[in-house]
Image 1 (cartoon, rainbow, N blue to C red):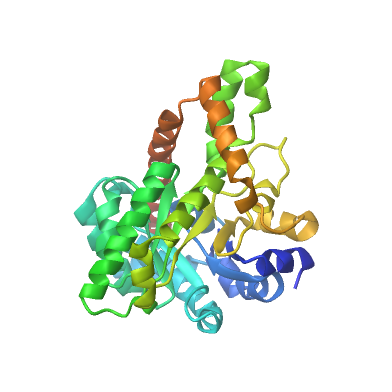
Image 2: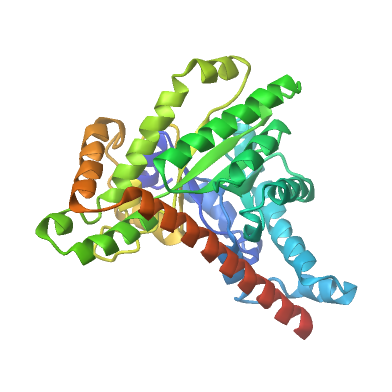
Length: 367
């Protein structure tokens, strides 16, 4: 195993790949990443699938079959995406077994157009859970206000959930409350809590992108000094909130009943500003019990020149609070930032889903 990635794993960080494609699966690339770079999970989203379908011929045979059957475009998209998720889940099954269900997970997202519709999200989560039919799948549910009760309901039914699009500390606390409520209902329903896994995907780089843009508009030396600091500070404080919940009597009761923690997952860890180190959101967010899902470019950068030097979260809580206080003093409206990021995140995934539908529609017509 690569030494840098081994240090990251030894520090307690699970390395997941933020990408999936039929070509990656059939070529054995995912299996190689598991073997050589200690990848222990996979996340997907509509943008990733749209990109995968636009390249190569890996989907041609299935598309021809779907066209011959005359299925709808939406049915074809679900057939294609769940096929890849099942395949990836099978490749990762040895990891799932070796870690007793903690890692070896593959995530698939509910239709992002349902992000503001609770009951439709619940129905979609159930359908995906049934369609993929693998114990090591995560169903991704967005952390919108409407998504919160869907998270509780899915968890209560024994569905493992990856909560996505979390930007704010307040919303993250609401997500953890929804998860705990789901576990409590699952316990009341007599379910085995040890089989229910969840992660909470806290987005990182997009926070810097939005706040840096606002700091540039402010234009003062104090504002310039704060660029590139908000995302890491925000994530570190999210972990502080997680630790509070892990120390609560409510969680301790569920833990005694066999439940596993809902691990924080650092999402959007590819660096978007070329002025920043390309390993920034990996090196600065290291602590035991978290997941970092990386695009392959970031994974390769960490393997090549990453510097992993122990816990870079817990010792820096005060520094993180200081950054957030300075941002407020400089004129950054945190609540407005995270609200804009959530709206933008939902909109981007809706756009990608529409592009995915258009791509599949065009391919079906050609087939």
